[in-house]
Length: 249
View 1 (cartoon, helix red, strand yellow):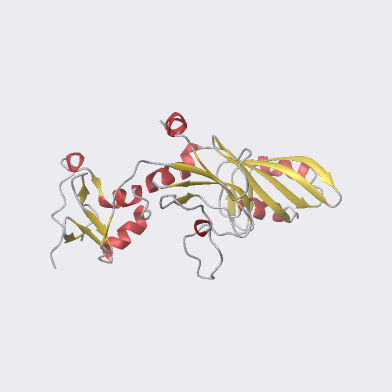
View 2 (cartoon, one colour; view 1 turned 180 degrees about the horizontal axis):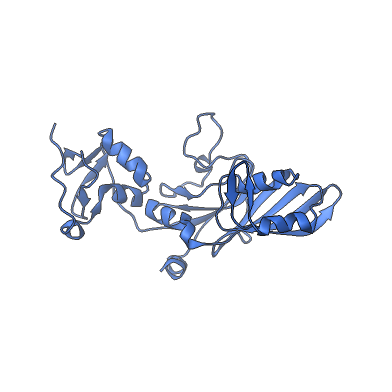
């Protein structure tokens, strides 16, 4: 079986376009890492030849196929989505649970999520057709604040919440500073406003459980400059390209 042409040296790379894994990520096919695995599995072809090396470079004049289907890069698009409780943010779930992508309105391009919200969390989820943009938005170097409204059972004391502002270690995992403010208490439940920058897996639930408080509702209100606002539950709204350019350069 023919193989892809030899990879050009580093000096020639800019003239040859972009690496094929990055191209596939921008096209929303997969992350760079997953794209490299697809290449290793022989699922990607370039100008009629099977790709055997991730340092294959792609230009607009080239033809790329994945599993025999052509891949093209559309203009970058970013969407706000109000995720309801009960949906997972993967494209396929081994346990058969409903996914975000199964519930999106028709007519949208193939999208991937920026970060995740777990099954029982709700609120703002950013979606894009550009894997490179998703990766950029998730970079810790952005230091973007993620804002949440959280309901817990019990009434946290200010001293307990102050511990989070200094950072906390739970089960050997060191979490960065977390801002937590008690907004209201009604009956046995309290509402908190929480801000953080890293957003590790189940971070809020774990640190609050460490303080003795069970989270019964978690709503993400903002991811950096992008806000949930009044977007109805289950609805999708595209972020205007001008706003994306202003926020990301």
